[in-house]
Length: 338
Ligand SMILES: [Zn+2]
Ligand SMILES: [Zn+2]
Image 1 (cartoon, protein in one colour):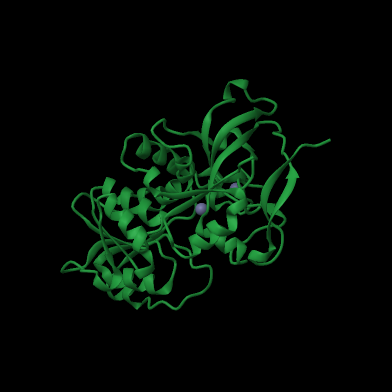
Image 2: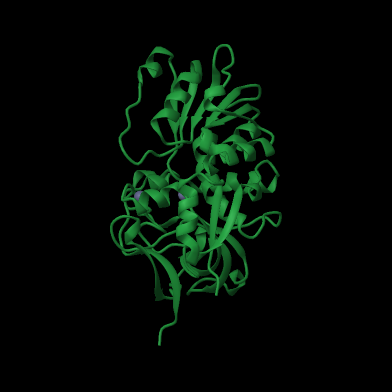
C-alpha cells in the first residue's frame, strides 16, 4: 500500500479547480531528496495559476516558496543530507544544453519545468526535488520565514546583476507586498534611500515597511524628489502602479519591472523614450541570485521573519488566499498539520 498525504492540487480551471486531495507520498529518485515541508508561501504567481493567468500543467501540486527539512535521499545522495534545514530553488528540470543553461541563466531555458506549476510542489506534506536545488537556511531565520528565500532570490536577480542602485541614490518601490518589501531591503543594502508606496488597502503592508525603517506613503501622498527618483521599481503588477513608477523616475533614471500583471495592461510607455529611462527586469532566479539571497540574509541585510503575516494550516488555504487577494498582510505561509 502506498502512503498518501494531503496536498493542494491545481486540477482544473479557476480557483474552483484547486482542491485539497490525498496524493501518494513521492519517492526521491537518483540525485533527489524528499523534503518534509515546514511551510510554503502563497505568492502572486499562485493566484495567477489559480486564475489561469500563468502556465501550469494540471493536475499538479501547487507551491514553490518552500522550506523544510530533508527527510529522505535517493540514489547517489549522501545520507548526511537528512535533517538539513533547507529552502528550495524552483527548477525541477532544465535542459542543461541550451544557450541559457550554459551561460548561467537556467531561468530562461525553454525546457524549464518548475515545482508548483509543472511538477508537484510544496503545498503538501512532502516534496521531491534535485539535491542541488536545496539551500541551507540561516540559523537566524524562523521556521516559516525560510519560505521567503525563493522570492528574495527572484528580487536579487532583478536588482543585483547588475546592481541597479548606488550609495546615495533615491529609490521608489511601488507595491508593498512581499516582493516590494524584499526589493526595498535589497535597495537599502545597495546604499539607496528608499520610499515605498501603496494604496489604501495596503495599510498593513505600509506599516511593515515603516517597521523595517523605510519611508512609506500612500501613492496619493507620494512626494517625488526634485528631479525624480534615480531608481523606480514596480512590484505591484498593475497599470496604476506601473504608471506611478514610470512617472516618478528622473530623466536618465532606471525603471525595474518586478511585478507580473498576468494580462495585457495599458501603459503609457512614451516616457521611457522621452526621459531616456533604462528598463530592466528579471525573471525568477538564478544560481547566482540564490547565493546573493543567502549572503544578504546571513549578513543581516535582509530580514525575512517580519514579512510573515500569518501561518495557516494547509486545510485553511482558501482563507489564506482570500487574505492574500485582499492585501491583508505581507506573506501568508501554509503549513501541513496532522
Ligand atoms: Zn513566487
Ligand atoms: Zn536549457
